[in-house]
Image (cartoon, rainbow, N blue to C red; front, top):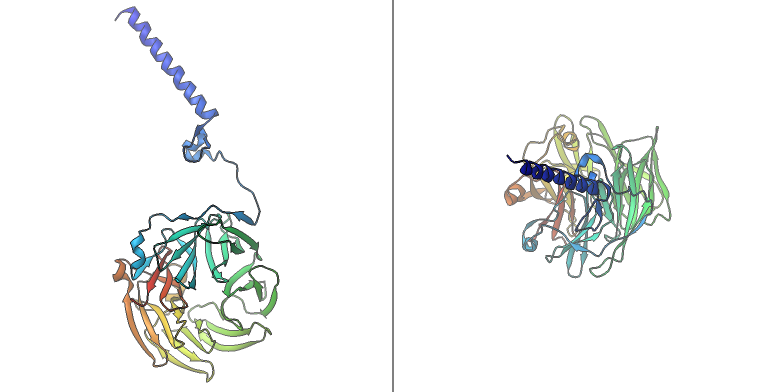
Length: 412
């Protein structure tokens, strides 16, 4: 090997090394540019354990201007004609329904991001209407004609629950959306809504309290105070809030009606083991579960104080009253046998169910299976948070297995 060749080889290696070091220095100090965002990408961006080059947003503003609505991803426009339709790609925290002249509109909030979407049930149109990011929204309850919701989410410590009343303004396909948020008390244990009003429960060391508040947060009214704790609520109608002790098999449960005007309360059900309830819209009947040695569901008539057993057995949490027929109840019924501790285990996530949809005629005390949900989609569906549209056409619910949102056309 000639001396000249060796010199050329060494010079080439040194040159490549200098070029590599320069490129390394450039990336480390200046970064590259993301072709999508136009922002500099620092060296640490390429290595996820290095941190984040962007400063953390510590803004506490409660009003956010949101981008013009954009189409959701991975949605097939033909899906809107299906009997059972998947409405969300990502996990959902809660959904609300509104009937307009053209048909039913569904709005929902994503669990991970807090982004809000709108779906027209009568067309393939579905779009994001709010970009405001609220991380880890684990529960959301809609009201005020689908223009407001109560969102509950975990702080970074995964312990503290924050609750906000969110109000959406200027919502349409051609204008931007503004979201305003009003902070609610940090010790809220349960929330339910009716119209433009919120009922929420707080818990102290020795008692619980219940308050009414409009979505705009202008007034707050105490209507409930009791030594009972660990409670769930249902804002039944403008005059009535139902309050029930949390269900635990074998433990006596109690249910009360609270007058929203006077704050007067009256006992409805007492000493029912493992009590779970669902009251009809006019507050005359209660569909409830008793969990002692066996799990049994009943219909309680408030006027004559009588109970009649109903079959098949299911959880009231899987049911929704018809908005058009006062004696009709739609329920998702697990295929497997319901034991006395099934509801507790279901709440805790220890078990999942595969459900069929049933129609209960409570006047005739008959029940009819309508659909095997798993057969329609080829996978188990564990129904929770069911809601029926005012026109009675759609049942919308969350699949508890993956928190996806679905709609079922009851007229097909």
